[in-house]
Image 1 (spheres, rainbow, N blue to C red):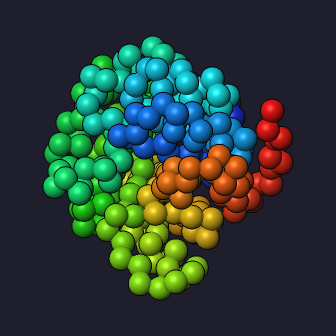
Image 2: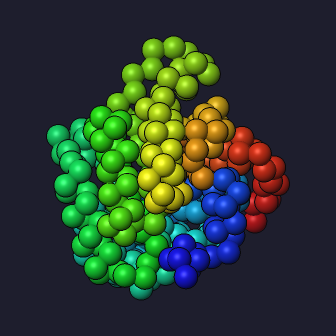
Length: 258
């Protein structure tokens, strides 16, 4: 049995149909009030999964208010077991956007080592690993193949922080998403060609304009963070999540507020 078979049935279905929507609260976001707002909006807007910082209390909070499965993100594998014990359905190494402004760069060797350590600690838990966008695309493709061989079940792309959009409107949104879209296209095809298929999640810099492009590029799902978590109004968050869900071709009704 594949480890992916251990995921909740709705998540497996979303991956298989190429429509998974993950809302990202932020790897460094430990603000419980903010995570609660984001998680509630994710549930009401029709997301499939919430990605929170690797903290057992945040796992329990996000699960309680959203009713959705929880993914936890970190770059320290030793943090994962407690979060899994608290109820996280899967764990993720990365993404690394929060570290780049600090001058912290993750190379292929380090990401591979983090993957091996995580798999050693959690041999049966679904593991997603982000491929650093600072690598040339051919190296991203090779790293993705190596990561699957090392035990990764899902591969995530990134690239929003490296984009330099210079246009307004929809064109600017496409420019913003170009690096992660290119990575999703290249990595998904490289994995298939190497006969090591693994679902690819496209994340970082996406919007309702570009999430359909991510699926067309070969991704099985998308992760969206800043378009939602930069907002402070919960209704606005719900509207953005609902727009993303609709962009993926699945209309949902937004539940009324209690």
